Image 1 (cartoon, rainbow, N blue to C red):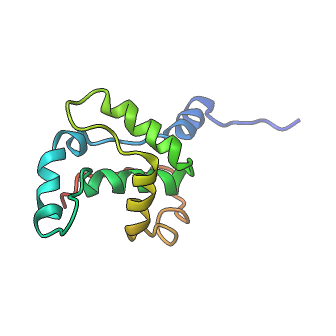
Image 2 (image 1 turned 90 degrees about the vertical axis):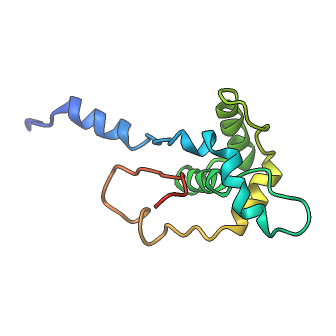
Length: 124
């Protein structure tokens, strides 16, 4: 019989951290401010949802593969905690995500680093 010298507490914590999403509250708190720039020169109906929010949803979709309706549920749950417009519907989420150029294939998905932080604040 072989001896397993793993530190199970640390191992378990590392597995749990793989599922963490670090949310920057400025994505929600700066909703109106974030909409000013993309809507400045837009023709037609203005965007109602800021690009950092859509980028966050796109990253969650890439990393965890939830259907668009589940993304709508995720953002609805977050929207309960702020006084901003309603959460986008899944069709809007789908359309906006598909217009973004999010490509994590070569960087995050093939990385051996187990911790991923998502910053969707739009600030460098």
